[in-house]
Image (cartoon, rainbow, N blue to C red; front, side, top):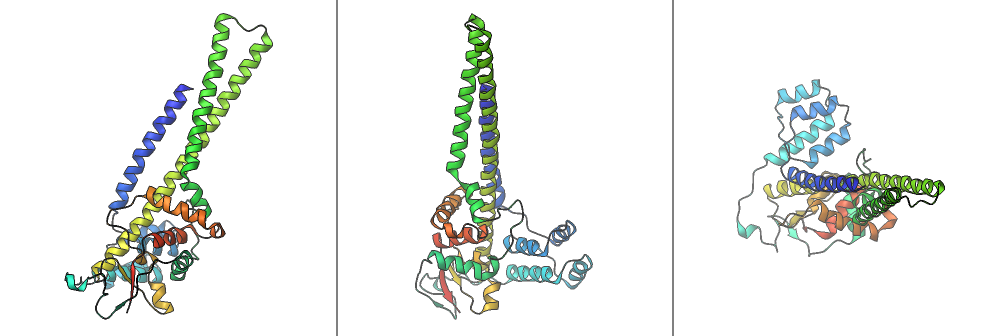
Length: 322
């Protein structure tokens, strides 16, 4: 069983390295291209998922007339093409002059009036995310089906308990194995029944240790999913902020769109201003875990809504209105 314990420790070490690689990769995403969209369509990925991918990452689309015709001939829907055009327009908009007088924290961009600083409360944050079209999206496997499932994946206490059980059952199995070996060597078993019982105890301890190792590996794998999922959302927030600031929105502020249609066009990521020091998936997991614990009444709602809402409460932008 010492070999199994060493194997599990090596597994944890490799997973820790893998998490670092994942987070590093998320910091430098590859732009989405026309060929990527066509490949996603050929893989039978739905329009809703493709549009979400377009909105959540950097893009480098070709949108000349000939390109649009080629996309249409490849079976790309009008809704996906429209999302591509919107993304291209956002990234190609001219950058506002870098004039410090135009980016004071107390004023909005030209033609806007800054609203008083307000940290959105939990109900308002949830509503702001949901009313922008992200509340009714159906999550696809292997994404979490609900806030409850994602909270289980992210639960560090669950990981600690699982690894603790591996340690305990491994030690018990080692003790049982040593007991059988020692008694055989010195012939201390008074009769065959005692030896059979000791062997049965050893087998049971080995099975318990193997089951604990299997369960522990599953728990750690789910935590990797949690960090990857949250890291992807953090990346989409950074991209949304970069687009907003490149098109003239002062750092630390967001222009709140009014009207139902305009509000639907605005991504909830645009309302979140992450700190200059990048936060990791693990740090975001702690914020989300607390949110999920504070709001059991929303556990069956989509995980994406509540990750964004928890980050909106933690890192709100100053809202300005046109």
